[in-house]
Image (cartoon, rainbow, N blue to C red; front, side, top):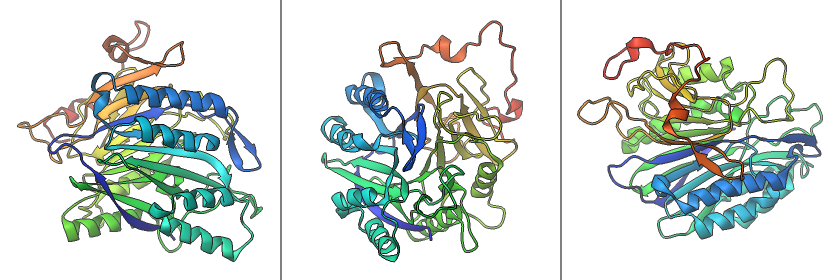
Amino acid sequence: MFKIVEKQINVEFTLGHHQHCMVCQIPNHVGFGESACELTDPRDKWQQILSIFEMVAEGSGNLKKLNFLVLPESAMPADYVEEALDFIREHFRPNTITMFGVEHVHLSEYRAVLERYRQDNEEALTSVLKDLDAGDIERVPTNWAITAVKETDGRLRVFLQAKSHPFVGEETIDPFHDLYRGKVFPLFRCTPIAFNFMMLICLDYVYRDLYQSNISTVIEKANDLFFTTRQRLDLLTILECNPKPEHRAFRDVVNGFYGEYLAYTPGVRDTVTIFNNVSDETTGIKTKGEAPFGYSSIIIHESHKIGPVDSPEFASDDFGGLPVCRLRFGTETRLYYFNLPLFHELDPRTTRFPLKIHGIYRPDPDGGWEHMADHDVMQEDEETPEKECPLGSAAEAGTKK
């Protein structure tokens, strides 16, 4: 069963100012070994992630304001997790939250990391120990992720969670190679400035069974938060290594999450949903038909409004007629830096564009990252046919569709 546990963290965002987020759409090169999906180039992959970490630590321009750094599912080599956490502890600024997926490990190895950071993972550790006691599953593969929170006083807290539902390459008829099903998922509650967020791993977003669905549990928890404290779920981040990021199953859940078709859902109406996928350079995952990796996106309720835009790097739409506004990125390897909407209703006295892109970075020949100039981001090639924005004139800022 999908269980949400609240985690209080001391993160002090600037009162009355939006938070800044960087989504890292980088490639995974994976192979199927003893532990299902393993990175085939762990050292090179760590060097790429380290280059991102170093850029964040340097904080050139307004990168000093970064609050959330997000990397895709299975992006971090397992052998470099401690090195990554040490870098965050030593070099990242206070009030920085880093989320990243880690390549598959055996359940016994996942348990060892839970025990190392037991103070913040008691519920997840208890669940794993109970499962281990019930069967011979020490060597089953585990797809997991870390949320590393550097609090206001500089203390680093490390929270772990395991994926609850496998994709086709992670699920087998052999129970000793089938993916471990995680059951405990943190809901982070920031103080003293109230801000609530969760992170899920890919198919955790769409999974359902006879008794419940993951997303309905998230909605129920967020509604309970609203009714008891008048707070909401502000941010939901989904880490993906997904060759079909716009599959109908994801679209259906987005529709139900924001649609309020059967009941009011005030706990999630203003939630910002971020899908952080890998880029189109990803290799090693076999799929049927076309596999368009990439297309990371930001989704907000239609009441927020994202103005019509269609550029080579991103475009806005309503995800095929849903009650949402979506900013959809491309497929290439990029770092997207933007702000999370602060205002929950469109108001010309505050802002007509609650979500703004602050910068897009692409790899440079030296293994670092180059901030793309405005003309590279917005300008089409001369040979590229002109495209019409999917939102059309009906999504003009300040108007309802």
